[in-house]
Amino acid sequence: MSQSPAEPVPVVPDVLEHGRSPEGQEIHSDRRIYMQLQTFTACKNLPPVIDFIRDSGWDAVIYQDASKRKHFESLATQDELTQLYNRRHFNEFAPSFLSLARAEGKIPAMFLLDVDFFKKYNDTYGHPAGDDVLLSIGKVLKENMQRNNDACFRLGGEEFAVLSLLSDYSEALIIAEKILLSISNLHIPHQHNSPGVVTVSIGAALSSKNSEQDIDAIYSQADKNLYTAKESGRNKYILS
Image (cartoon, rainbow, N blue to C red; front, side):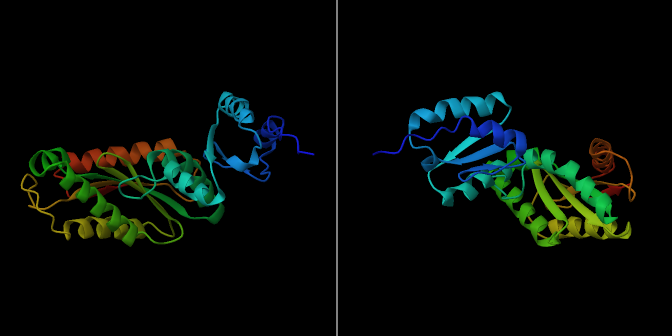
């Protein structure tokens, strides 16, 4: 006697409501549910499940076997070019980053980086060369920010971000200086930039321990400092 088809529709609301993870249906903070195709014994069950998930404000990702799940998860959170985290993950992760800082009694720090005269670089050397620059900067960030509480992001275009939990304010100066020098020391030629090589400008913002300041306020301050760094000559960092 053949087994009757699985009825997944009643299960999915339960997953959404209670955050449970039945076999083959895994709930994640990125508002996606990853479902293994073999969970459903009849393909006709898939459309109502997907419709219900999307109506609930989630995305459904269907994968053929369990080995594919990690691949789909990385596509949701990683920048394809640099393999850093992407803006979507930055937006989702940043608020919990502040909560972690408060729980551990650390100083949350945000660094925003922008490649100096990047449009002129692309216009002169070509977009493939520009991609190589972005890839090189991504490697510099990964090499320099390797602590458990460090996270690096490509926010889009030539803009990057770093989130880090610090023990004291002097660490922020060390990080900013290290990133600035490491990128200029790549010695990538850039004829439209006064140092003659690719450089970045950095705006950094720190919040005091146990501060009630939200992530939008910290981002706004870092962005303002980045603007000041660019307007005052570039290839420098401004921190507050």
